[in-house]
Amino acid sequence: MNRAFSRKKDKSWMHSPEALTKHFIPYTVKFLGNSEVEQPKGTEIVKDAVRKLKFARHIKKSEGQKTPKVELQISIYGVKILDSKTKEMLHNCQLHRISFCADDKTDKKIFTFICKDAESNKHMCYVFDSEKCAEEITLTIGQAFDLAYKKFLETGGKDVETRKQIASLQKRIQELETENIELKKKVQEMEINVRVTQGPSPRGMTPRSPSTDLFDMVPFSPASPLLPTPSSNGTELPPLPVRSSETRRDIFGAEPFDPFISGGGDFPPDIQSKLDEMQEGFKMGLTLEGTVFSLDPLDGRC
Image (cartoon, rainbow, N blue to C red):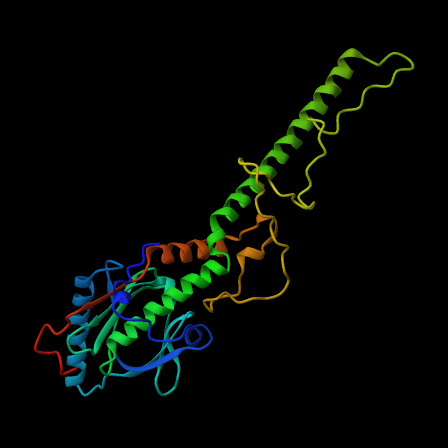
């Protein structure tokens, strides 16, 4: 996977894995806002967004509006942005949708990340002002992303392609079975036509009944268990697990689903698309960068 964790070489991760997998790391920061950007990555992309949001915040401050404080809750389930007083969730940014993080290497306050919106699929840049811990927060998001990717693999993400192949094979079996039924009907019709043309059979002879299967095989039943299918190198593909009736939650806190316990290769479109999206997001990776956001005289007055 193309993960650009260049900052990890000089600094170790900030927290224990258990803190991010079983709990979350909270940070109280000022939220300057979010803005749509054209690309999922890029230093200049986030610099432009920071400029716009700082200017907009400066205007609001001149009108008497304070910069709102929020609480960030960072874990393997994502980066949640909550109102610091009411604890109402304002945004929920899943980690596989976050593609770029940057912090100010000069004043250590401003940090930002780009996340793909779950509903609109637009790339949104979120900008925050922290108390001298911008780099720590960026590294914490990087560590959470790394742990979430490993968790995704452990829960079956590495078998996505194999599962897709199995589903494709089972779909082909269903298609062949349908073709077989149609061919069997045609053979029966042909035999009936032959008997009608030749007239009644000689006394004492019983007409040969139609074959139960065109290829003298036992007809396939979708309800019967699917045996492991040998691959081209002689090994067997892993059998599909039995569908479980137990309700589960996916590791990223979204709607309950587990595509790896679906029986019969039945992947509902919504689950398959979500699985593909997660795989694509983790494959793109997360880029962490340090940059300079102090670019105009408005900085320091927001």
